[in-house]
Every structure is written in C-alpha cells, then in structure tokens.
Amino acid sequence: MLRGLSIKNFALIEQLQVAFDSGLITITGETGAGKSLLLGALGLLLGKRADLSSVKDNTQKCVIEGVFDVKKYGLTSFFEEEGLDYEDQTIIRREILPSGKSRAFINDTPVTLQSLASLGSRLIDIHSQHQTLEVTTNDFQFEVLDALADADREIKSYKRGLELLKQKEKEVGALVTDQENFTKEYDYNAFLLNELEEAKLKPGELQELEEQYDQLNNIEEIQERLSGSVAIMSSEEVGVSDQLNTIKNNLSKIESYSGPLQELSQRIQSVYIELDDISSSLLDELEKLEADPERLEQISQRLQLLHNLQVKHAVSDVKELIVIADTLREKVSKTESLSEDIERLKKEIVTIQSQLDEVAGKIHKKRNKALPILIKELEDILKALGMPNATFQASLELQEKYLSNGKEVLTFLFSANKGGSFGQLKKVASGGELSRIMIAIKSILSRYTQLPTIIFDEIDTGVSGEVAHKMADLMMNMSKNLQVFSITHLPQIAANGQNHYKVYKEDIQNTTITQLKLLSEEERIKEIAEMIGGKNISDSALTHAKSLLNSALN
Image 1 (cartoon, rainbow, N blue to C red):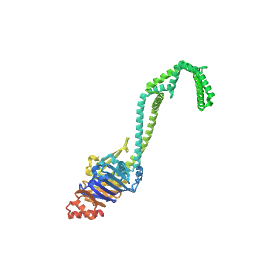
Image 2 (cartoon, one colour):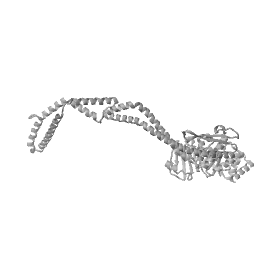
Image 3 (cartoon, rainbow, N blue to C red):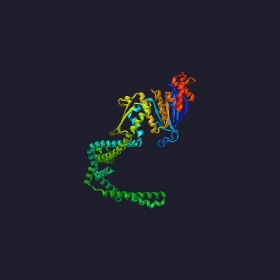
Image 4 (cartoon, rainbow, N blue to C red):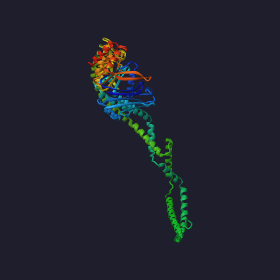
C-alpha cells in the first residue's frame, strides 16, 4: 500500500510531503484545487510518460517519490525477474530534468518505464470517471469473472499453449510457402546439381590441369630446350660442367696460399656441386617427358567443361562451383524433406490443440461455476446502491476457434428495471448506473485479488442521498482488504474516511500553489459542512456534518 508521497516542483505543487495509513482515505477540495495533480503525480510513479510542461520551474528538477509497503503481496519473484533489490518498504522515484529527460528508479536502481508500469499495475488501481466504460468491454468482464473463478493458473497455461500453437502454425505456413517456392525450382536445381556432381569437382584442380595442359601442349619445345641445356652443361672440354671443374681444380691447388683464395675455392666447389645437381635434375625432367596426345585431349576437354561451368554460374574458381553445388544440394534436400517436416509440425499442432482443449475445458468449467456467483453478488450490491431491480443475464458459449483467453464468448446483458428488456451494458446502462456497477465490481474484486491500493476519482458523481451512504459503506468494506482512496464531492463518503485530506490552493508571494493537508476533527466538521451547505456554513450544516462523522465513527 502507499505509505508516503513526496512531490517537488510539479505543476502547481512546489513542495509536498504526506504520509498515508491503511483503510479508507478520503480526499476533498474545490473543483480546480489540484486533486487531479495528485493523480498526475501518481501516474508518473506508475510509469506514465512525462514532459517538461509538467514541471513548475523548468530550471529545476522535478522529483516525485512514493513509499510502498509491499511485504504482503508476493512481489519478490517480480523483483527477481526484473533484477531489482527487493525491499518490504519499496521506494519508487521519478525525476524530470530541466532538459526534459525523464528518469525512473525502484529502490535506487534505474529502470525502464515498462518495468515501472509493470510494478505500478501491481500496486495501485487508479479508477477515474472515464474508465467506468471499461465495465462494458468483454475483456474487463472476463477479468472479473476469472478473478472469482480462480482460473489464473489455467489461463496462464492456456496463453502459453496458444502462443506455442501460433508459433507452430507460423512455422508450418513458412514451410508450406518454402515448399511451393522450392517445388517450382526443384527440377532446375536438381539438374544443376546433377551437372556439378557429375563434374566431380576438386579444389585446386583447375590450376593443376592448366599446368599439365601447358606442358603437354608445348612438349617439343620443352624437350628441345632441356636437351640443349643438358648439352651445354655436359659437353666434353667446352661444357659448363667441364669448364667449372677445371676452375675448381685450379683453385684447389692455390687455396692454401691465402684466406681469400681458400674462400673462393670453397664457393666454386659449392657452385660445382649445385650445377651437377641441376644437371641431374634436367636429365630427370627430360627422361620423364613423353608426348601423350590422348591425355592432352582429355585435359583440354576437362578444362573446357570447367570453363563452361564457371561461365554458366558466373564464377572464376572451382571452389566457388563447389560452394554452389553445396547450396543446391541443401535446397534439393530441403525440398525433399519439407513434406516430412510439415507433417511432423502438423502432428505437434494436433497435440498442442488437444492440450489447449483440455485446459480450455477446465477454464470453462470454473467460469460456469463462478458466473452465477458473480451475478448474484453484483445484484445484491446494486440493490444496496439504490438499484433494486438491476438484473443480469450472462452466458458462456464455447467456440471452435482459440480465443485470447479461452474458447468461449461471454454474453453479459443488463436490465435496470423490472420487466425491462435486457441489452448490452454500453447500450442500456446510464452513466450513473455504470458508475455503481463499476464500484460494485471493484468491491467484489477486492475480495479476490491482492491489489494493495485502489483510488476512486469521483466515481460517486451523480450519486446522492441514501445511495451515497451505501456507497460509503461499500468503500469501508473494501478498505478492510485493501487501502482505498476516494476523491469525492459527497459529504457522506468524506465523513467515512479514517483519514481525511483536503486539497486547496493558496497564494504565497504572488504565486499560486497547491497544498494537501490532513484535517483534524474540527477541520473535518468544517470541510464537510461546506460540502453540505457551501461557504456560508449554517448551524444546521455543522450539525449535519457532526452527525455524519459520529455515524461513521460508530
């Protein structure tokens, strides 16, 4: 529940700090005094977006801070999921900087507005007049029914299953599309793949074949030049080897006369050995050479095949052809296996649907059991609120298709008058009737949910007399289970608050600011008397105010 609220530099609020207790808390004040500012500040704490226009002095930082007692509401798992430090007394802070930038903190840890809103929805329900229309929506009606049905676990299970079902159906759709596309290309891809596989491609083959082709195609020139080179090296008396041997022998006879000569002799010796080795290698290469027109033709055809494939696939290397072959192989294989994958997924979908049907059946059973209880409780509360003939007709109809929260459609019809025709709430209920229906629903929800705090913003508009007393009693009963704030213009409700705060404006140094104060007993009597009879307080108004307060205390 909300234990404390601090507001600084927000709209007409310069500085405000207030503590709150449990139970029913009433807030009163003249129209335009600034009650909406409190809700605006709380809205920022709960994750609403902010802008610089909310700041009173845009050269200073705006800070709004709320202290919440959360120890009874099982929120530790939320803090763990969000990576936040859990504290029984959790502090939420929102800052708007002069630059217009907004920051949010939970227990001094920076958080996103999404995280803030997620926590805020678990802490406070702010109900304003325009939100009364929510009661006419099917989603809200299901929310109320499911709270009574205690079907939260089954609904969460159903939603997880539905999400999985949609995912599998999406996968099947994608595979079917792929199958249609791949089937159109299958024959062509299979032909291309077969062509590449028959080529038996090998990495590096092209370079090797080109070398063999060049050698076989120029074998006569190679033989001629190798033979000439061998002759030059090995010819007696005039050959390079014979001449170098003579030089080697000459130097060996004089190398002992000086160091340089010895070095030169060794170098000539090395050259002679290398030349002899080269000569042997030339002879080996020459002996290996053999004209092979048949092999030359084979290589030529192979090169032409590789060249044609490279041109066809717009690549310049055999490695790229191998990559293309792998890609085609994958496409062909995928096309062939798509039918199996589609059938496998369809079987999974049937299993998921069966599980969903089972969970949906449990939800339906719980809802059917809770529906008459909800209707009776609503009708009983509305009778106390001055609608003795209010009746509801509701039914749950199972559908074949899977809906967001089950497999059924809820029909929720209303009649305010005895013998009147039933119709949808949004068509047949007046604004005042909708307000009373909403507070009746909130009263029921307060017994079935763990919401710490609810704030009613003038939900009692259009209500007076004995109905106002009944509405006050209803709020008092709600406050036994949760903290209830009521921003009201009704003295009957204001008098029932265990704590009564007043919002008012005052001028300080030519500046209008909004203040909030906890009223003493005497101040409450005066405030309630003004609500009854206006600014000119009469004795009868004071007497009536005291009577209302005494009645509330008793």
